[in-house]
Amino acid sequence: MKKKFEYKWIIAISCFLMIFTVLGFCSSGRGLYIAAVTEALGISRSAFSVNDSLRFITTAIVNLFFGSLIMRFGARKLIAAGFISLTIACILYAIGTNVFVFYIGGIFLGIGFSWTGTTMIGAIIGRWFKENRGTVMGAILAANGVGAALSIQIVSPIIYQEGNKFGYQDSYKLVALILVVVGILVVSLIRNNPKEDNLSVPQTGKKKPKGNVWPGKSFDEILKKKYFYADLFCVFVMGMVLQGISGVAAPLLRDVGLKESYVALVLSASSIALTVFKFGVGFSYDRFGIRTTSNICCITAIFIMIILTQITNSYVGMVLAMLYGIFSSLALPLETIMLPIFAGELFGEKSYDKVLGIICSVNTAGYAVGIPLANLCYDIFGTYNIALYISAGLMLVATIIKQFVITESKKERLSLEV
Image 1 (cartoon, rainbow, N blue to C red):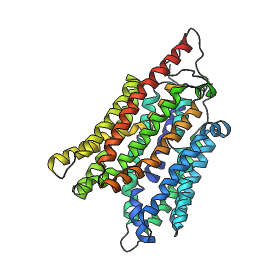
Image 2: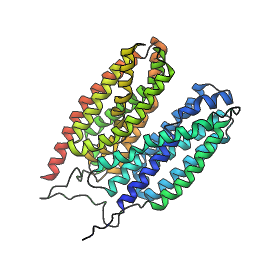
Image 3: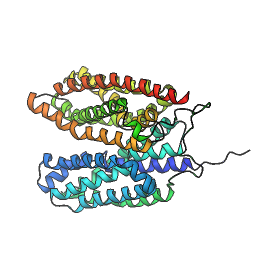
């Protein structure tokens, strides 16, 4: 008998295309615009960077209400609104001649990412896939690296047109057009829920839930659990530390004297490795579970921070820099693919969307403070090493606390399965 094609694979392809476009063209390559925009408009880089802070703060705030919004409007309408917000942001960036216009664009960008990024992917995959969620999410979120590789090749020559210091405006217009086309396609293919009751959660009783899916408790009950707040602390630290590291790695490598061309090579290796490791982390979760997978990512994060403190302008330093570039991509899934996994595995299906929104919000709040704190340490001490040692210590604490969180969650789960 011929197996019936399942629409969930169309959903997965649509999500892949969305991440490919949204993160690939609107997020990963944003560093290319900094020099072009600031030089063309005569504004400082620090003033321009407020745009990114507003983006992160907006995403954090909007994600707090993600659960309520998706229950009221559904994924499809939110995704449509997300693409519209991102398009508006690009249009504002294309026509803006004042830094405050870019700040408004940053707010729209933050709204757009809230409804087209990791949080939305986690919610959609949670509805359509009850098994192998990690592998599927890993494959979808790996689209970020592929999209970034393509977008850089497309927009870089447009931004830096010879004799045209406003080339970045043409690039933003092109990205806006791409968002409109892809947005229409994705929204036309996305469905809020499967025809069958895929939102229903396994019931307690003699039969245990299949795979990693379990009912969980109500949101009000979860709010009373100490391990929920312990997990939020861990998620905040992960966002703060990892964004801080990725934000200062390039200037650190240049500060120690490594050539620009080699720094670019390290960053390119990191992008390629990220595509591989996102899929690998998802597969690892499905195969080995949440504790092993999160510990691998956390220990790797500590490892790469120590590596960064030891890099010098030498052959050994070049090897260490490349090790950082490759293995930093094994730590970064802690702020992407692992967030939906934390929400579902640790707290269950019943309040999944609300918990996911809060977890992503707290993680994004960590983004907003990570890079400024790292740069503050540099301004005070003249080196990033102090920030790296502090970050490594915080990550170690978060890793230890995470063991408690996972253990308490398993006890909670077992009590419901009895």
